[in-house]
Length: 87
Image (cartoon, rainbow, N blue to C red; front, side, top):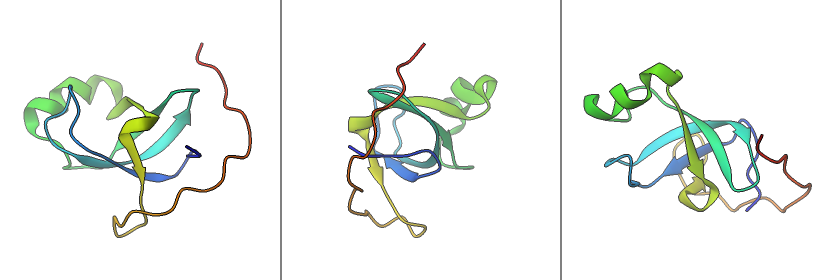
């Protein structure tokens, strides 16, 4: 999958979050990305989990869908460069 920093993405519900949400990728790693969750996307119980991280969550690439400004799925761009390994 060829996602990039600043891409808008959609994430279906996961083990940690019972609601799906939209966000923006802030950092890419080999198999995951740090995503800044858009305001009012998660329930109060779940926002308590991420408030201490500035609304940032780590999500696997396989759980992210690239979307446009209206939230419509987009074709993924071609893979172009290797990703930075997590430290």
